[in-house]
View (cartoon, one colour):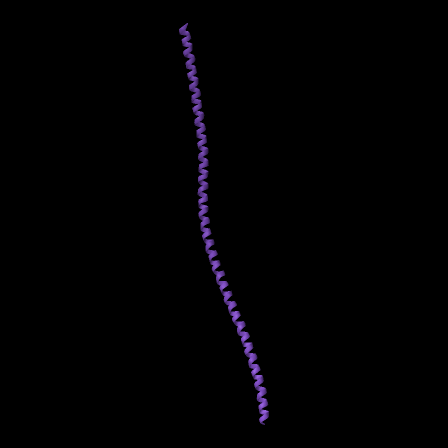
Length: 131
């Protein structure tokens, strides 16, 4: 009787150990599948992030190159505008000089006409007196 009970107990214990072993194997497989799936997803996200970073770096280099070209163009335009402004100032100086010369010429012309007018009258008057 004890031997039968002992054999049943050992059989139940072996079945229980086998069930635990099966559940442990199932759990380990499930955890392994979960970890593998998570790693693939993480690897995909890391790969996407790395690809995005490389793309951004190349676009940044391209932007720096275009910015350098734009800066050179802006500097050239500033130089042209500065030279144009200088030319306008010189033109204004020439225009001012020309207007001063015109006024002085008109004053001289007026003075000469006045002198000519007075000289002619006096010369005519003196020539009439002597005759």
